[in-house]
Amino acid sequence: LEEPIDALEPILAKFSHFGITRADLWVLASLEGARGAQANGDDLPFPMLWFGRPNCEDANLDSDCVEGDCSAKRGPHRDLPSPHLTTSEMLSFFNATFDFQEPWETVAIMGAHTLGTLSRTNSGFNGPNGWLSNTDRLDSNYYDALIGGSFTDFTNDNFERMMNAGNWVMEFYNNSAFGTPDRWEWERGANPHFVMLNSDIALVRDLEGLIDDEDGQVSQCQFRCNRDDDAGCARCPHAAETFDIAAEYKHDNAKFLQDFQAAFTKMLEAGSDTEVGCPIPPCPIPGTFPTTSPTLPQPS
Image: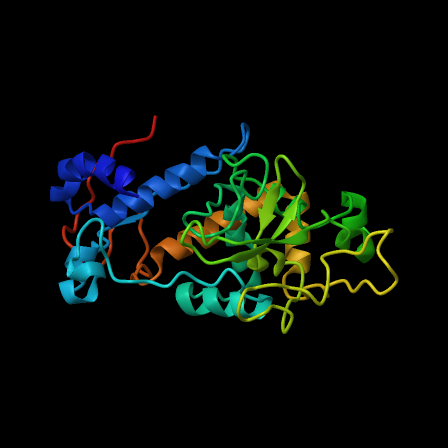
């Protein structure tokens, strides 16, 4: 992340005297990224409502940070959430970390996986083509890859058709040459292939007790059973708490975007006292300096 951090420093220097922080610029960049990644015709705004978030070097002691140095590029060590969370574990994580109270908030925020790719050198997962074919588009196609059936099947609650989605199968990667953990991941297709992690699959399959604690392999069931599978094929059970929400998003992109915006906004405001509301954004987070709003540059 050194390159984007360095690219933002001149902007930070220009606006920091207004109380704009580096953390605010990361938030602004993510909001503008979400807005710009929508398809033509989707123009849901992602406004910057609050500013004044503390930077790592201002909110932590050097002894708390990586290599004993809090800076733009070194903050406290944070363990990323496991890529092998089950449905209940994922809901619990987002509830504890971001106060997500409803399952739809977690299902919607996971739709961010429509964007980006996965690298063996960073995470060990082999996903150079991403989760989906268009890695620059924020839309509901993520759920289309997890839920089968047509809109008619959805409206008629045809459960078996909806369970018959893409044929995701587990593949193993030895990453000893990359210095990253060995990984099991769900894949479909070839040249290119696309990827799902256990936590993605957990939106539609209940993997409780089915994920190997050491390496993340799911070996006791399959995502779906095909015609040429033997009679003993065991399909992973559906995730009752989140399956129907994912199915709704598959067929309603506008609903997904609205819920994603709400969940993303809540995530970005986590830990800040914003209950007073912001009549004319952007507003300073209560208790921060200054008490008036700067005029921020508007995206072109």
